[in-house]
Length: 152
Image (tube, rainbow, N blue to C red):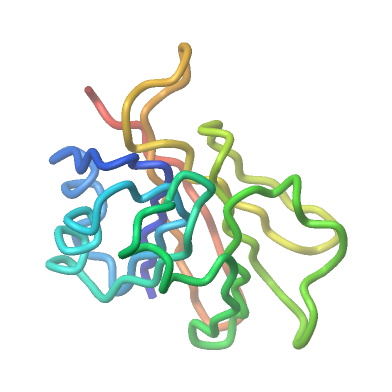
């Protein structure tokens, strides 16, 4: 299963990001979407699951939850916008992967057996940070993550 990860688009849906997410079976947007047209564009590639970021204050975004737990095959994924707000493991079932955005800094690391992925920002460049998305490859209980830097 191939899952696309994107965050912090802030209303900008780059064609390079859409290209990088082609072939994904599902796309997760970790907040700061900025415009519902971003979700529409992503939805033309694959079903989208999104959460609200701190900048998603418009009326359309209020229906989005701040966090989500979803199951992708045998893997439990917890979505949140700002990893700094994680004070403990999410309540409920054990989580295998945490997907977060907010910092615009791409990250793939494992902490206490949990894979943490920040796809970085696919929106406007912040400071000198790269413009990125990420991809998850799920095979049974095995999960691999990769950051994809966009050539923009």
